[in-house]
Length: 408
Ligand SMILES: Cc1cc2nc3c(=O)[nH]c(=O)nc-3n(C[C@H](O)[C@H](O)[C@H](O)COP(=O)(O)OP(=O)(O)OC[C@H]3O[C@@H](n4cnc5c(N)ncnc54)[C@H](O)[C@@H]3O)c2cc1C
Image (cartoon, rainbow, N blue to C red):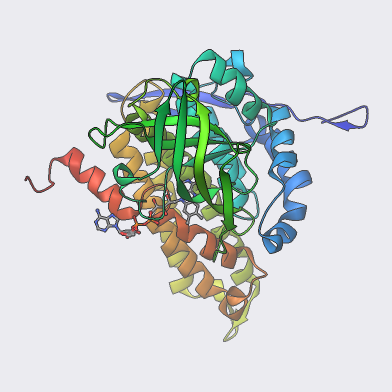
């Protein structure tokens, strides 16, 4: 909406219909008209026209884009109103995540997701009022860029084995170590850092700490070159005796591993919601292209193997959406959905790989160029089976809940 020549975007509550279904209460959110007009406007006007340039440059201007999103309320949809959030439940965040799938690449939505639903849930839930005022409120407003420092060079899947240490010295921690694969790490103002704060058991010796990135001893060593997610900067960061006040610890010292595992639930559901829209767009673009491209006297689409395959893929997308909505409905009612979120993340990663591969094939040589959405999706979506816990990690979690892991 334009007011007096200044662009203003506002959030409209998505339509939520609650449908009791057997014992499960299911939320169906309608991600159309009312829910999505504002993000669509921002995407069309502020983001998509520049995506090709940012992909080429290997970075997008997070401060500028987050300010626009923050002004419209999209960075704190399910965050407390006292800190500038909209105070809505998590299903609304997922409605926004689905809408952000209309951005013409995977990298920018991923960085937005890190800001709104991956680096900040633990802070919002367990952080002190002082910490929330210093880090959460400006992140929701889009004034600060956040990143999440969990993975390290020697510890990705095995989060418990991280080596970064925060050792108490008076009322400060002295931090040594480093983080790898940090999304937005090259331009972030603060990091939600997971570090060992004692020598105890690996699930009980870690804490999450709000770490300003401009402190002496924080070194952004390099921006990592990647095959996809190119417009999102991914950094390697070192900590050389970085001093941070102990009051920057989120919640209770020693609870960091548990908080991070909870934080992962939202991260994984957010990732699934976001990629669903991209998958549908790739199917639709493939239908459009193959309908007009003729081979052997017929549109490519009219060959049964092609339209049957696309129908199969669309069916899988709908199944994934149903699982996501079921998990979300349970989650917003306070249930632990670790198993379902892991299933949805696993399925999303596998389906994205199949869908990207099949659709790219039907574009022929055009699919092998960098100019089309399908090839960007093919490269970007490969991360879904690796980041935020690889497929095998998801399988291990599901097996744990099924009680099928070998007993020691
Ligand atoms: C573009 C990008 C952005 C990222 N952003 C962030 C971020 O912002 N913050 C952050 O903290 N991290 C981030 N990550 C890190 C990401 O979460 C890790 O890459 C991921 O957790 C996997 O860890 P790893 O790369 O160390 O792989 P490893 O732990 O070395 O695992 C290698 C492979 O081993 C296999 N494997 C794992 N577990 C098992 C098992 N139990 N059984 C059998 N096989 C198994 C899997 O196939 C896995 O891919 C990002 C990564 C990328 C590439």
